[in-house]
Amino acid sequence: MNSNMNVGFEDLNINDNLLRGIYGYGFERPSNIQIKAIKIINSGKELIAQSHSGTGKTGAFLIGCLNNIEESLNHTQCIIILPTHELANQCYDICNEFIKFTKLKLGLLIGKIRIQDSINILRLTPHIVIGTPGRILDMINKRELFTDKVKFLVMDEADEILSYGFQENIYNIIKFHSKETKICLFSATIPDDILELSNQFLNDPEKILVEKENLTLDGIKQFYILIEEYNWKYQILLDLYSNININKSIIYVNHKNLLLNVHKFLEENNIPSVYISSELTSQERKKNMNEFKNGSARIMISTDLLSRGIDIQQLSLVITFDIPSSKDVYIHRIGRSGRYGRKGVAINFVFKDKINDIKEIENFYSTKIEEMPENISDYINN
Ligand code: ADP
Ligand code: MG
Image 1 (spheres, protein in one colour):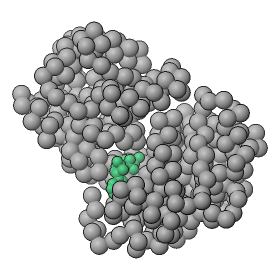
Image 2 (cartoon, rainbow, N blue to C red; image 1 turned 90 degrees about the horizontal axis):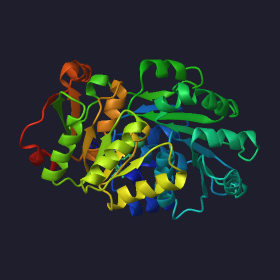
Image 3 (cartoon, helix red, strand yellow; image 1 turned 90 degrees about the vertical axis):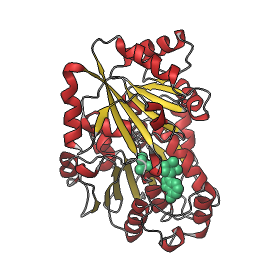
């Protein structure tokens, strides 16, 4: 992960109180993307930064931006946009740790909580705002969030945020910013059309990009299991979970209707699991996520709502119950394991007549996806 072993955080012109927070959080040395991105952000350039899942992009933009915010100025200087509640929460928690020894104030703005609660957060004029697109735009429109003195506008999972579902909100948010605001985009996947699109609102950005051939993760072993009938998938799940000791795992399904089916099936077989769905309330989502994080539930079932960015310790296995329709999504899903140089395993359930989907992914990313061997547990527990 840190091929550049000679560079430390103290070599990146990071102020002392922030440094204490970073070390206190347990980071010892910056990863490559952190070294590159922090230097660019310090230099005042805009940035498009791509790097593999699990290489430390969150630290890269948080440390870069936090380091360039004036504690003594009482206005919002940095807005960080993420696509889901879970990611906003995750980023917020990390940021809180980093700023522990500073006087910086931080606010979280996500949807489905009371508008008045968001307003109250903003009335404290946080230096940094972290949130999801809809609520951030809403607060700008309501003149509760002021953008005129924002130095950094960061989009994590930028390709997702700039995709059609969010696009209008994002354009409106950008519109409210001045030319002085530096925009920074981060993601593991930055397709060409997004790169093109970003030309419209970035000003001569620095670019850190990865070839798609180099995008799969060396640390993640990928397998497939051939399926003939849909019901087999349930039986195979049961076999896997009954025979192998799996620390934490995520099961990805393609449709939210399946979440409950899989959850109930596992429950009937006395295998506890939780799931995340857009139909749950914000509190329920938070509760389920926390149970998964603290290990009281070791299986998370999700749609692609959670395919990106989520960083869970001890997550050793990703099961794609259904093969995703897009190759980018595949990379994000399997990237939930094998983080920061650790090892992980991905198992894909694939219909016999759809084996080409697997071959296509293999070719596209120049990777290997092999039929699952009998000794699968050796891979998972290593
Ligand atoms: P990405 O966004 O690139 O997928 P994350 O920012 O979620 O990656 O980081 C992945 C994991 O690596 C997290 O568990 C994080 O705590 C850890 N990590 C990141 N940077 C460092 C570092 N400099 N030293 C040690 N661990 C780190
Ligand atoms: Mg990330």
